[in-house]
Image (cartoon, rainbow, N blue to C red; front, side, top):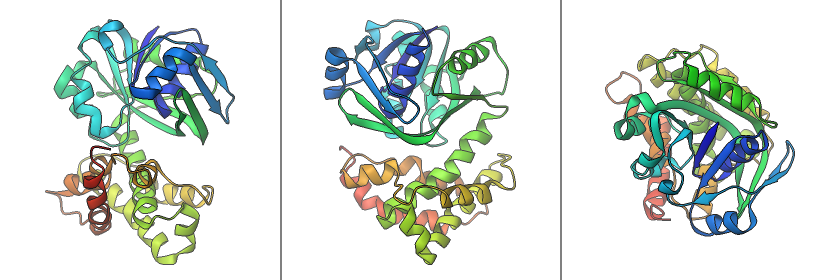
Length: 308
């Protein structure tokens, strides 16, 4: 299988290395110092599931690669539209663009650029980041990747992707029955985890210990679940309870990518997370005061670091 990883950071770099180790033809698309390091020293993954190092072709120009079977699209949500405009050289007639991103809008944005027939939904459960140029660090999480055609069909290409990911060491691969449910399921958790650890500047352990903050955490999850159901997404009834229980078991010093971006003055995914909850609640009868509050608290910082 021929893969292009568009955005070879914490998620994309991890998947690219695991696929390469499994024998697949993998090309990386990156930029800046990270790209320079990938070209000169290769990609190193330091992982709780086992380390690896691979030398893969890396570029910032998709035209250097040409058509592939799959594009693993792993850029930050605020870069989706710009990056999608560069996908053309990678697309053959049946190329699947698999979004492993935060949020519930990326698939729609991709479809507007490349056509819905090319787009596959995906969810990544992994705590990983670029530790330094050329080095991806996987510190926790199950390295669980969930994916599926937008219409739920079991196509040949989704079956082949499933086979490829299941062949990878250090990857838990799951073919979804309904990818919309999976996208909103993760969205409910990440809006709470990212929003609360960023807005309070506290690790999840301190949020748990502060009764008011923990109550707010729970409310954020519940609001997202209510918005999903108001938009005809059939989330299981126990979704909120499941995520609250999961959060209570996280390491006490757990933060989030939104907190990382805030504290490192980088562009933040606020518009794809809590602000998106507010947008999707518009026109429904669901009130989302906690997500509105998180958005209001973080908005000045998001605007300040928008070009970070």
